[in-house]
Length: 83
Image: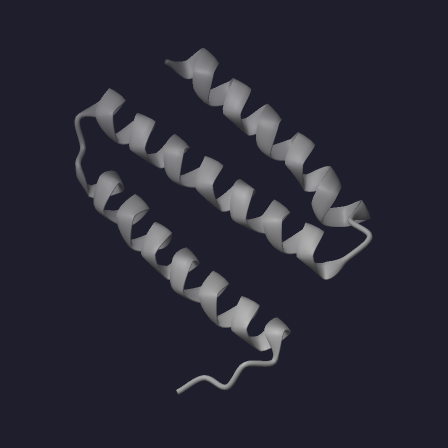
């Protein structure tokens, strides 16, 4: 399990390349979204590995906040009015 978590951390570092070098704001937005999803997966795996379900609650809360933030930011970039 630890090996898979270390692998996911490596994938997150590879995804951070797109965050730093990305030619457009959309590329950077996708990179931030993928890094946050990897973080949620790591939290869920750690929660199942330790048996502490508090981390699973934190992962679900973080995922919901990430989703709402992503929707708000894409509406801002698209120029649509937020009601």
